[in-house]
Image 1: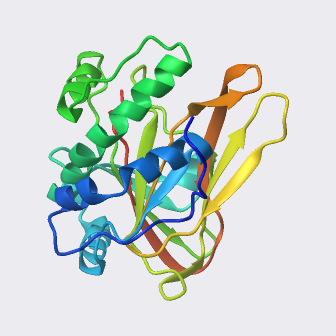
Image 2: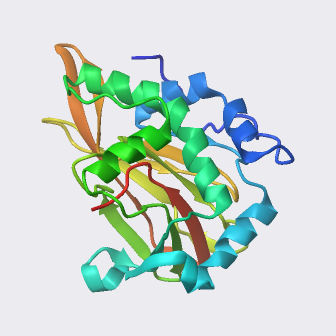
Length: 252
């Protein structure tokens, strides 16, 4: 495993006047890989500019572009709601999905090799999506989440079928302290025969958190072992909070 750095050190912001795929390419990928190995999550500051965030958040009321709406309280998921985008995805969401994946696939394949999992992921996202669709996982999973005061998201994993890409991303579309208070992104790591470890990830508007979907390898004194991770959002104290989630596998 690579040497550790703290997962909340987002590094320098990327330049917002560049196309999204170029911004993704310009991220400090060695640092992100290092933090994913060390903590199970990493941040990327200013991946989207404020106007892009506002446009994405504003899509929430356009029901025609979504395939379903989930009210969390009805299912015991927490409080708040989210909507899954339908195909075709909004341009910026599709671009993020296609641009982030190739930088993460080497980490995903290395993790599977370390955990002695036989699955290997293709280098391009479209080829992985074809694999999902052949297995019946044809429903898109990128989503837009909305929380208001008192809402929260219980710790969970986004698993939708046999084919799971082990890393995903979320981008905060609202401004902490202005649009909302509370509502921190939280990730917990359950270690074998040890107490669970929690990480609270501080994000600003337009920042992305890249994190483990379900499990990752950790180097121990007796070799590599698997740790399981879950993520969620703490209770919102005031205001409204919007987030876009970028999940790379599709759902049954």
